[in-house]
Amino acid sequence: MSRPLAPAGRLFVVAALIEGFTWAGLLIGMWLKYGPVSNELGVKIFGPLHGGAFLFYVVVTALSALCLRWPWWATLLAVIAAVPPLVTVPLEMGFCRMGLLSARV
Image (cartoon, rainbow, N blue to C red; front, side, top):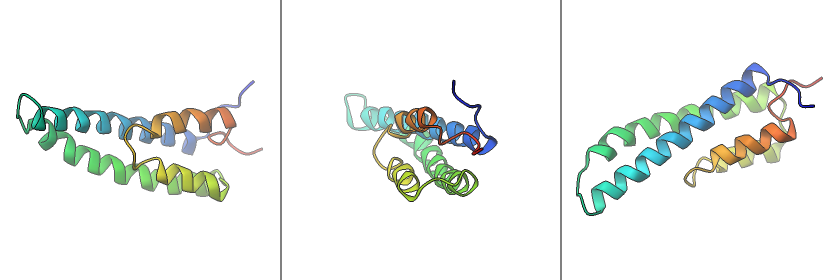
C-alpha cells in the first residue's frame, strides 16, 4: 500500500500537471499559428502561461527536492523533464509510484 503524499509532494503534482497542460496549450497554439489557420491567439495566451508554469515548476521542484530529501538524480531528472513537451506528467506518476512524493518515515 502506498503512503499518502506529503504537502510538498501534492504541490509537485499540481505543478507538473499545470506545466503539462500549458505545454499542450502552447503546442496547439503553435499548430494553429503555423498550420492551416494562421492564428496567433493560442501562442499569445499559452506562451506567457507556460513561461510562468515552467518557472513555478522549477521552484516547486527545488522545494520538493529539499523538503522530501530527493536523491540528486531525481532532482536532476525532474528539472530536465520540464524541457521536452509533456514529460512532467509521466515523471510525476513515476515519482508517485517510487514514493518520492511521500513523507519520509
